[in-house]
Image 1 (tube, rainbow, N blue to C red):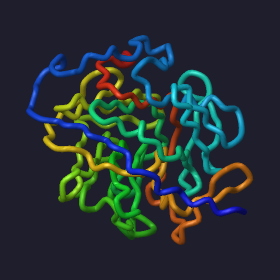
Image 2 (image 1 turned 90 degrees about the vertical axis):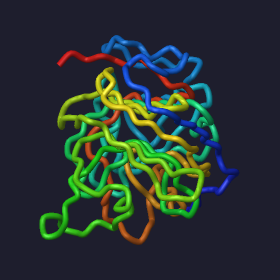
Image 3 (image 1 turned 60 degrees about the vertical axis):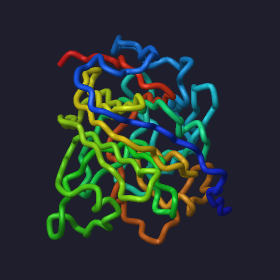
Image 4 (image 1 turned 30 degrees about the vertical axis):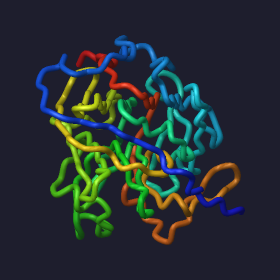
Amino acid sequence: MNRTRVARGAAASLALVLAGAIHGCGAHQGGASGSRSDAQQPPAADSVTVGLWRFNETAGAGNGDSGPFRLDGTAGIDARSDFGRFSGGRRFQRSLQSFVFVPTNPVIQPQDLFTCETWINPSAFGQYELTPIAACWSEEPGYQSWMFALGGELLRPPIARLASPGFFAPLVTGPIPGKLVFALMPEDAGAGRLFVSARPVRLDRWTHVAITFDGRIVKFYLDGLLDSQYAYVGRIRQSPAPLVIGNYLQVNYLTGFGGYLRAEQSDQNPYYAFVGALDELRISNAARTEFPKVAR
């Protein structure tokens, strides 16, 4: 087993300036065209796509990127190939070895405009503060940038078997099970900021979820509809953090394991593991305005 420590390359720049409070679905949504509104079609890799992980692999650790930069990922051994919303998907388990890792690349942290979207089918909500969907964030000093997640139940012993390590306790002050969460670390000195959707997602069904920035506003979308929006004035801290999908890891302790990656951190408890399936995760350097609309 060869230890492959995550490189501390040059810090990527993620400068997203969000100012002023705008109300209404049509205001300040950017000039880029959105993803296809037909919920029966997977998203396209278009001119503003940074990365698109379709999770269509039928076996193995590889997770190919259909975007222009070929940001291929590698799975932990407990992130299994499975059925997805369209074709294949990745199923994540309550295990520290259940994740997809994409190495550091500056394009994952766009400077001005940003969208992160995916189809999710959660089987359970996390017991603790939250469970990441996708994030450039870890406990390494200076490695906190942004995180898109599901809110957790914030359970404590004896209801929870173990107490939370409290990594997100300064951000999450109460239970928010199933609600979408976006966390960011300001460029200036200060505590991290947390934004939360108005509605929760439901368990055991596919939901399209998205977070966008247009330079002024943080917006949440569920199944193609605007859920909530927040003004934020400031810049997101630059970070050399890699992209981790479906878990929260000490990324500098990953090792090779038969083609898969393994998290070798001392505490193996999966406090923040996402449980369920993901499909068609796309990051864009634009604030998209249209998403798949699903009739319920």
